Length: 247
Image 1 (cartoon, helix red, strand yellow):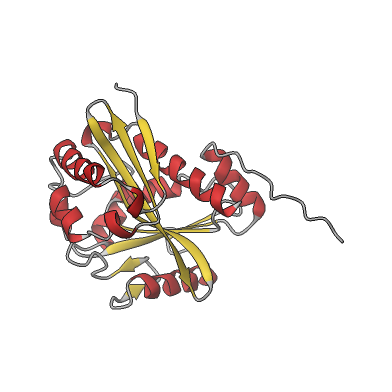
Image 2 (cartoon, rainbow, N blue to C red):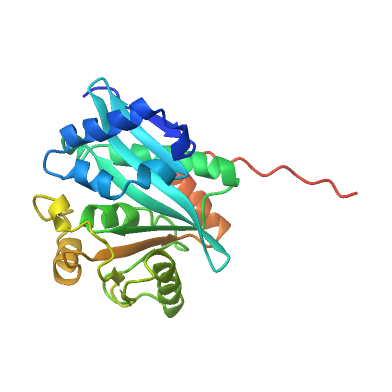
């Protein structure tokens, strides 16, 4: 496999126009079973307004993209993952992990700590499974649990974020489904309904997530130990904040 390089952009405005074109054309070519060109046209804000972007490149071109924005809900900051796209030949490999790790390394460096709250709306069980992989500490919660066991406090938090992200949509806090949360991007983005290989997760999506719906996924790390565990899982070295001298 070709060596993969992860290229970080500090805001969409920092991406050269020719590279924006490369992202569009290369991903459309490397994801023939997905309607990438239409998707990126419909969601133009991703390549125009995102605060953090990472592109994965090989000698064959761009093979992956992740983008996120810094958001706020009632004074509570969170990182919202706008999209995660990986070339089909790279599915099952390390590109998705590399994209996530590179982006959160930069976010953590800027914040001085790993974000306490990360959110993503998705139609694909693979994205949920990826988010769930990061429940690497007892204090970390991944919402929804799929079995209805989420604590009321986390459901309430999810409801607040859903209202911030999709104020025009109905939200089911029991399942985490944002009804019609995909906007104009329906299931035709995928030629075949996406699957994760985890039967429980795949069955949940098939039963609960409709064609234009999205699942709101949260990773909540409320304690320093939880955030340190997340950083470690992504191979991010946390830099302690400088000590303040007492006058």
